[in-house]
Amino acid sequence: MNGMPHWLFGDQLGPHFLRPGPHGPGQNAPLVMIESRAVFRRRRFHRAKAHLVLSAMRHRAAELGERVRYVQADTYRQGLERAVGARPVTVYHPTSHGALAFVTALDNVTVLPARGFLVAHDDFRAWAGGRGGERLLQEAFYRWVRRGHEILMDADEPAGGRWNHDHDNREPPPRGARTLDAPPPYRPREDGIDAEVRDDLDRWERAGEVSFTGRDGPRVFPATRREALAALRRFISHRLAGFGPHEDAMLAEDRVMSHSLLSSSLNLGLLDPAECVERAEAAWRAGEAPLNSVEGFVRQVAGWREYVWQLYWHFGPDYRGSNELRGRRPLPDWFLDLDADAVTARCLSTVLAQVRDGGWTHHIPRLMVLGNFALQQGWHPAAVTDWFHRCFVDGYDWVMLPNVIGMSQYADGGRMVTKPYVSGGAYINRMSDFCGACAYRPTRRTGQDACPYTAGYWAFLHRHRGRLAGNPRTARAVGGLDRLDDLKELLRQEAERRGPP
Image 1 (cartoon, rainbow, N blue to C red):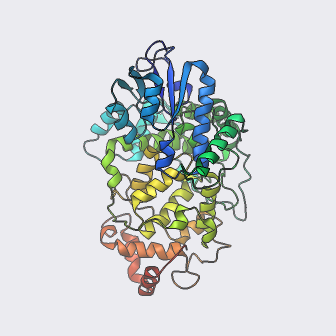
Image 2 (image 1 turned 180 degrees about the vertical axis):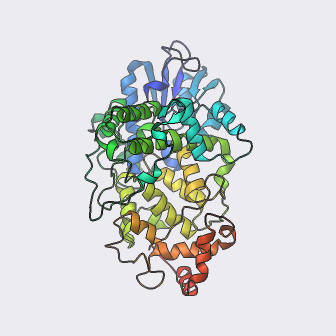
């Protein structure tokens, strides 16, 4: 190798990670990629996730050809020694606390500023420092990003005169519809690299070296830049227009609805967030998609994704131990094993099956079915976070730590969001078609047909009454406990609950 080598992690796979700049590798710097077996031994990942990550890394290595030294090793340290010995290397800021601590502790490694996000760490720190101690609300951050990057702006005003189109994007599913009947998303075709990955995963499992959960069917998420661009084009051209109104809705027979399915491509670094929001805005300005759908998508990418990334680093490693609601219960085996067939509650069974079969479901089932149930049951938030990290193809530490600890499990006591995202069966009934064919009734709190979510909701409010009564956003709900004539029976029922719901 000639020149200082540059180390590419497995989530730094797009061309923007090799783009020349003042804080980048040299124009023709030799590259190093390391496939560490220890990563898969430490956690029981979803099989489809392991397949996608390894497929994407090996495809990228094949594209880079002789420029890259691709090393398969037991650990990153061993791989780096085999690739470069004691020579200095550069690497972009990794995406987890653990990885950053590892690379900064190595001799002769220069860590370059992060790429793959719209907002630089220094810019965020300046913004946060200028808030005068106020809470770092997502809406304020989102507007700051929009202004600073001139996204969906007309001069100094938001396009269309409104920053937020959530009101137009919270419609329940069409009555009687089994699907949204949206154009299908892009689907890649597997190739010889995918077959090689699958053979390796099978061999590792047979040898007892690793253990996976979930099912690994044909790959449905992009593993190359070409595939990711095709998926982005397909979404912008055929699916974006219908995305907004029902982005919070759920249908049992329509897992993907009008969602973009681009999160794994963004998180692997195959897509740059800037190109995603620019293409969405261009579709609106060309009259090809309504503003509410475009703003909803932009909010997910330039708002929420950036916000979560920055809070992960702002809150620091100790945030992982947050447990303000004192959840202590371990995750049950049926949940850990994605045993959807053991679950009677149709919403939870359906969503768990979606995770089992593909390692993905969209944000509302994650928050209001999976996370909601975990919160009600008082499961340990760190264990819930780890489960989401392992079981989703787009799950990374930086993604799941704020999303689960802060939003889903309210384990930080309100540093990130203003109230727990907890609800009974009424919300699920309104926003989905799950309840109609379910053995439980969303209006029932006790008895054989009592909805586990409805009973769990009231038990949760009772358990945390002292804390939630003082929160203006939950005080009214807590007050409803005094109007329940079956509260004692409900609490007894929940205390005796055993097994999957």
